[in-house]
View (spheres, rainbow, N blue to C red):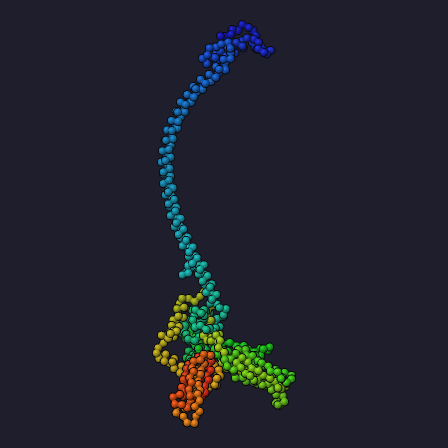
Length: 503
């Protein structure tokens, strides 16, 4: 029910305020309209208004939801259609892109693999190529390392032209050197060994003509000189005698140490010294020790030096008790200028005294001997006797065997029960007294002949001289240089005969 506008003012309950009748009526009519819109019957109690508002809201929301759902369904349809179309486009373009990427990737992989293979090969060459330069005149690390190692080995700390004595006859054991016992001729020495070739030419005092060289080889079995330019650029090396005597070790006297010695390749040792006279007559024995020991007591010579040609001024040193390692001496006259002594004989055998192969230092450059050089050197030694002499003619073998025969032109007689050191290769020969048929007037006691070689008994025969069939037997056996023989025998003589080839 609408409230008529009959009053000028309307009081708001429980307040002192008022509103105009027109405003009140407008509000009242609006509320009633809302209640009716909600489908309700307006009553006087305006408390219906909130319920009406709620219903209107619900009605409006349902309608709006229906609109939104319809619109959403419509939009989903549009989006789905567009998405399907777009998906087709994307799939088509994607397949094209995948194909393009795969093609580009395959090409790139092939390029990388090719480049990688080239880089790997280049890396290997820079690391280990030794058969030539890697790039222009540059070589690999391994090639430089090999050259450096060879250079260090070749140099040996020796100068070109220096002699080097070695126990080995092998080139590999004597790097940077050429042999001096074969008389080799290198026709292109100026190319193979330019520094050595120039060194020899700078020393004309070391050179002979070919005719002079040949004469020395024929008469002296050796030549210590070179022949330069026998053919243009050639060099013939000296030919040392391996069996000859050459100095291998020495000590020269000085102002403070007057003693000296010379040791030769065949073991011959000579040494000497000097000692001044004391101011009083010596009664104490003085022992002198040799610098190097001998195989047996050497021959010792004394030279007493006087101040005047009068007996009272003579020096009277005298030696005694000479052994392989030294001697003892005393002085009985304090006046004089002192005494010099000289001893000679064969040295005691030691490994270093067997040095016998002469080599000449001929190249010390950083670049090692070339392949051609090595081949030439190998060929030069190819004609020499090998280890088992299989490449030596029979005539040469027979001549070699003849060198082992006894040299009856010289001999030494052994002392009974006394050590004897062989000065060279040779033969020990026992010649017993011939008493096989002499049975009358001869003592028929038993005797024996016992021989030891380097302390080992090798012969022991017992016999009764004066009895037929029981006399001593002669025998002979071969010994090497430096071996010690001790023979004990009752009758007969023991001799040492050097080999013909021991000279």
